[in-house]
Amino acid sequence: MSMTKTRRAALALMALAGLGLGPQQAAAQSQEEFYKGKNVRIVVGYGPGGGYDIYARMIAPYIGKALGANVIVENQPGAGGITALNRISTAPPDGLSFMLVNGLGAALSQLTEQVGVRYDLGKLSHLGTVSASPWVWLVSSNSPFKTPQDVLDHKKRFMWSSSGPIDGMSDGAAFTCAALNLECSIVLGYPGSNEAALAVAKDEMDMIYVSDTSANNYVKAGQNRALATMGRTKSRFFPDLPTIFEALKVSPEGAALFNFHSTAENLGRILVAPPGMAPDRLAHLQKAIETAMHDPVLVAEGERTQRYVDFIDAEKTRKATVSVVSDIPPEQKKKMIAIIASAEKK
Image (tube, rainbow, N blue to C red; front, side, top):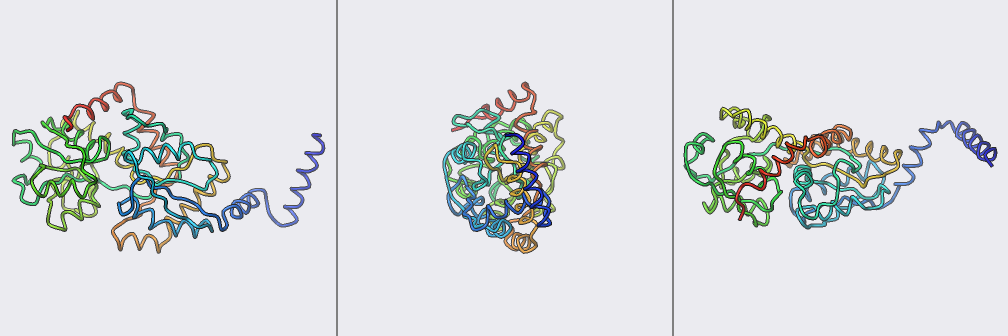
């Protein structure tokens, strides 16, 4: 029996040699044939029209071109993306479905053991990071606060608008309040950042913590004003805006909190597939996505629409993800959970 298998393998290699193909080339060719003309899904854990949906629909045709497949976007809203990510984590590892994920929200939801989380972000098949945005601290356009120092000098309880307990807005506010020793209430329940930012513009809330892509829209509309970029990286939309470290003398403890949250923020818009994919298919999908994300036409479209594509490869994405969700010491993890739970949320 073993001799028969050996002879079959030898004959297969001879056939490949006759075609001028080595084993690796043949494997690549077989993956190309697998994807040719098939329907492939990009899952988005939010409804149509939001930032993740727009990004997914922008990149889908380019991934389809690189794969030779029909790539369609499928919206699966629920629990801030947790529902869809749970499904992806148990979906067949056939390479026909993957997800554009809010890396920050997904990582912190797992880290803080939110109810309903059944995925392990570090164990999924990583395909790369499409983009990552710095986040920005906004107030209303007519707010008396012109700088972060103005906020620190004003002794009151500040009201932050947000959507859910781990949505970027809420946890960003919680880390800011902890790092700067501010008295805060974080008000949940706004449908999204548009409504939350409008509540600040109407002076129903004091401030909001949002990605710079969203902040750019609100500031250009004249409804909000930016106080600082919340990390060490400048925003391309607000090049003259100070970072929180430039605007204030942050304590070592506060700097550690900002640094950790910035690392999580830098996960950005990550692409993940179910765990357990065959290595050759995963490698083929990763390569196709990298090719698509470097397509100059896509890059130009992103610049034109201000939906920038700053691709980070799959291995760097995996390492960054693991550093947030798996490598954090237990005591630090407890502290992060306490911070997110500590701010009064209504």
